[in-house]
Length: 509
Image 1 (cartoon, rainbow, N blue to C red):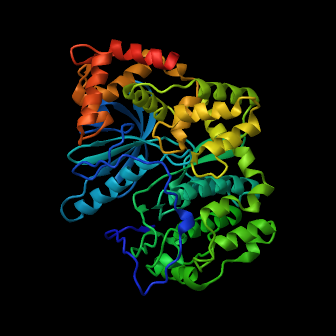
Image 2 (cartoon, rainbow, N blue to C red; image 1 turned 120 degrees about the vertical axis):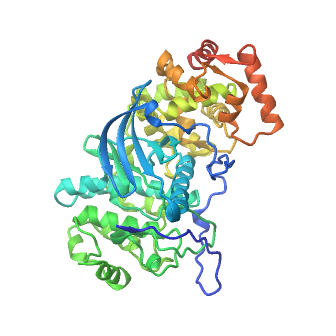
Image 3 (spheres, helix red, strand yellow; image 1 turned 90 degrees about the vertical axis):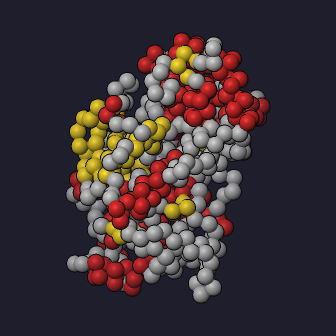
């Protein structure tokens, strides 16, 4: 149950509000994204396909996964590749509510397009028709964390709870560094991607009410779900620390099986959130570190409430080796991934985008899973990015080489496609995996179709510009696109045979 009505209000500093310094939340060197927007406010991302047509021309409906007042989620299968996706069908509201409805959907799409983290659900594309919006995202076969809690018939052990919470804190830390507040963290919005050896890999979803914020912003809109909403949100004077309170509620539920602030109705629950203590007797058998972390999360004084980056380093996770369990990988797999990293070379933008698109749409592959764990070994801060020093230190701990410094310099130079001084998650993955898995006609045709607008069987300069640059194009971008067409194709067009040849040369080298 949540209150999601009203306009978003990014109220700037108000003199009567006590401001909290949030320097630690921000990182101005986080990955940069294209910010070109169309008339509806949709940002441009070359990896996210968007269409104004019936999505069931491309996808076959398998079954319904769930439904609500305005949205239905289906399990669908891509007609060409066979890839299984979750498709959220959102009915356009008429008249009075249409603007708010569209604003929330566009907000979710834009935020998901910014995200590049292994524990945040991926968006693959969206369709807009006269009556509906359709969002294509990862399908998480394990259901939600809420389902897992219900089916568990009782509290989880500390080791399982710590494994899940470490992933949640990693997501929140990443979001806050990206200046994004989720505002509706709850087990229903945390999906189970897979289970390995009894441990669930989670994916946070539902960013419809999430918010981009600036340092010092005080939010006033009442947003959230009843059991998980922070006391300062109820008072309508809050910042990104509200997400940490929600994390505390989730952690308490995992360990006890009940919410810390329950009640027979909304008023009773809100009263407890605002002024009552949670039942500490239910935590008597938990270790001291566990109880300490919960107390730091369910702290009403936001200045004393723990931040996500500090929560990730809490001693509770050291006790149960939560981080080590997540990133366990065989030495030979590590060597193979490092070899792939070292030989990766930049190429033309059309080849880079095509490969990035293939990787983005195939993150369920076994090869990706191994590379993801190696990324986790290196990304000890859990913020979804790696700088050169972290890459060196991470590789030094798992790989011995007399040329390690030179290798790292070369790897970083080749991989940092965005030139933002960091390696993003998918940048790392697409270089670390064995890319020969994509050397099939089906995979290459799928990548070709990204550029071939309208299914003409050829890529024109307008197609290329639309994917790589979006609607607003500079003269330099126009010239680059024209040069790519001339170098690869003939008669101002690139046909599938020519596209296939350059991709085989790029991937197979």
